Image 1 (cartoon, rainbow, N blue to C red):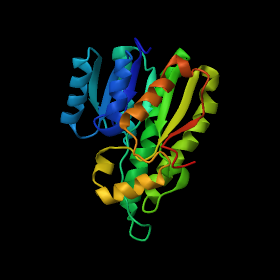
Image 2: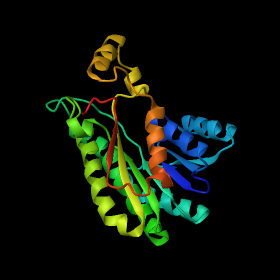
Image 3: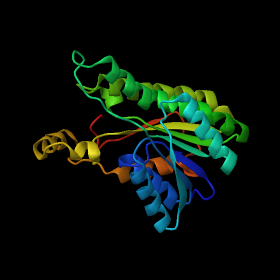
Image 4: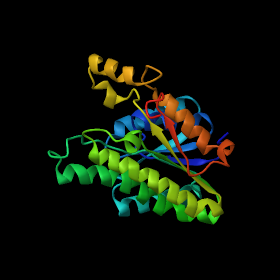
Length: 246
């Protein structure tokens, strides 16, 4: 389904990004596994991909750095001649109530989660425009739709991604570039793994499907949006959340 496609997944060394990279590879894409600091985890993802017969590479880059991202995208195109799929997944949390949240806690989350996506798209889209094709998928969150106490930084960044998605979809549609967003709910990752069993149970009671999602649920949706099956879909925010944000 994605044979000969070059896919870049930011923040792909763990959690949802890891599953997205693996799933895109299963469908035939050559996957660039971007990571910021955990090289060992990124290499582990690449090992899984290669063991299954797929192809890819790891690439260290802090997406909050405009200059570093430009070098990253230019290097990929110089070596592979194209960028077909971008998944803006890189994200961090620095949770705190507004009265306790520092300026640094706000800025670092916005710089990674929102500016990082801006940097990536800005550096890569010139190549997509020339080839008149491309798929951009932004990983937002239900927190950007409903808000979440203690996450004014994270929710603001994820809401910003939704606005970015819709604006880019309108700007780029005439050149054959699709831009969509996926909004996960509570997903089984390292982040939710830190929660107590009691808290997990309370969370599950708020979800109509009564369970947390799996990273594969997000990866399957991203893979669909990256494929030709989604050629007539753009500017959409698809919630994969068990119904929590209906």
